[in-house]
Image 1 (tube, rainbow, N blue to C red):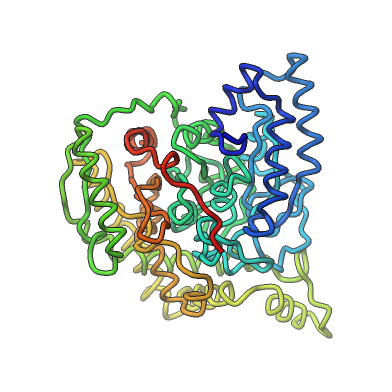
Image 2 (tube, rainbow, N blue to C red):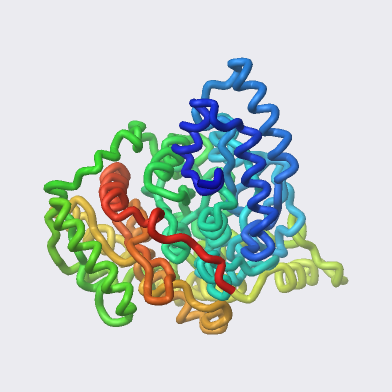
Length: 489
């Protein structure tokens, strides 16, 4: 097996047994990037030269006993919405095309303290607004399973890089499904943590009450390993919660006997692709074989989540993106004669079409006369959605749904139809609206060999339960052993 096909826990074992060195691992990934990046376009900024130098330094420190982290020397990729000191951080936008972050996000401080090696900043939909990574200002990322199709979004660069074995794992961000949906479309594992579990300090905001940083990895054990690094209270983030730390790797028991799984019938209604439905039904039967108790139920209010999400998210985006005015930092137009010209032209030239659409929608729902009719009502629906999930978790340990109602679609087929693109998030947004954790794992492929994702939703701070449920299914089905991206053109 090639070095880049190994999971992180397999790389750790090879390092412990001195079968591989940090430099050999890093070089293997750099070579893989040099081979595949021209097809996949996963990176906005490559740090391969810096990675090779850092690998030598880490290796020396390990040999001298100066570093004892078990993750020292493990490469990683970072979504370009996460501030990385001294490195260009663009959020996929022309507006931040030359912005070099002056500080590290809290998650980057954690990554660096473990001695991990950053291979580069990964492509994304501009300001995380999109479901296909076609709205990046710099390039369109391709899905390694079929290069004509999209990788999902907005963390499409992160998911595609992991699927293509250009990084062993990556950080993504999830506002309405932006970790889980691309993970599903690229056949990898992606976890959106409970809101407040991982610090948002240093994350370029889209929708502050929904955004969460989380891991994208090759398998569930790696996902748990990276989550262990990311969690923890952060005084610099007022949304960060101080909860007891858990070891998520310890939660992987490979046993779901007696686990109560709820299947919300609304998520299996009209609009779900037949082959996706068939794969999910097969997965449900597998859980029954493994000893879980499975029951269908109604989660009626969840169907209003999509509308509530887009109203709240766009309102928050309108507010958050107000800071990009051509004055303080970011893109500034060269075409101006007055201060008003700087504001108007900088924003007109610096933002892409989808970002402008969401700013306009957000400004509208916050405007006088419409605030009560839209924004306030959406927040009330949000409370109802949360209560509906609370009620469901009184009876069930885990809720099982599709991650995406469809598999990866051909690039260019939906980007001109925003409503159709927004519907790609229909299975994932309710998790963000309610602040819950959710994980997507592969559960098969369709007739054309494209991966299908299954979503497991847990109650707040019960990441351990959904990780164990995902791990048990993964061990029983061995997706990675049976299916691999073929870079079909």
